[in-house]
Image 1: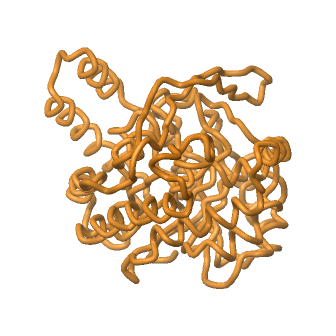
Image 2 (image 1 turned 45 degrees about the vertical axis):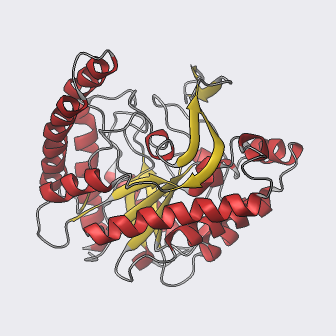
Image 3 (image 1 turned 45 degrees about the horizontal axis):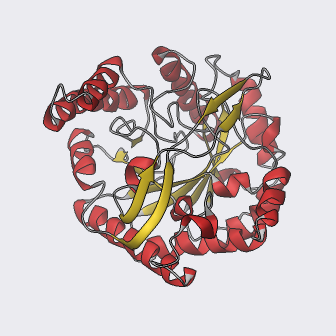
Length: 374
């Protein structure tokens, strides 16, 4: 197996929040405990989840995103010029059984000049790194939202015209803020960075593409733009820092938002985005076939999200191996790896599985990867 990320057996990053963390977050919200006391509870839970990841055989180790409420919100709100307010629309997430889950996510708006006033993930990374066994190839991984997460949902309407009459200036400020954060993390020792993006996966959905065009945006131009934003955000990273991007179709209480194969974005995405690897969702028929992988250039990896974080059942090893074989018809087997399609808890609500389920499923990922790649 490769000694650098992304690893043959990898994972997106989030785990179900322990009850102690959820209780402490509620007590902090009610002003019953201090921020320092909340952090003590989080520290203990993170130390435990790090050990569990190492015990199961993973090499890319995260903090489970235990300090976050939502995978993107807790990061974006710490950028200068960003305002979070009560949600103004009702999102409908769909489950495979036909039921729906309704949720009104907080609204994120740009109300001033974007800046990086202080480190965002620095202290969190320092603690995570202190818990990760210093035994190569084990390494700490930090996941942050992709820059596009501050643009796609609201588009031009979500960015104050007084602060940014020219969107190009906004994009320049946004990526400069990201570069500052990446530089800070690099100085602290981070060498495995993941950017999480829902928008490029949404742009695979014919219905979303039409909605995007109806509001005046060209879906293909947005794909080019979002690749450029990632490239600008990570362009100064050290040569030995691995950067990956995870594409998500929605992951809230085991429900999803969009569907559609990667063909509409694959050629642009795989060739123009200058990352080392792509975590792609391939856990069911909504993700389409593997043909878009034919666009994968040499030197880049695809982590196949063939297993599901949305249900408790552990996937059959032979079936997963067969699907890896199908993918290898379009991309070199040596450029492929295995994971679940998304995290187990992209928001604090978590998917509808039990804590032990996630570890059984990860054991299977590690086992299958060992069988396929040695």
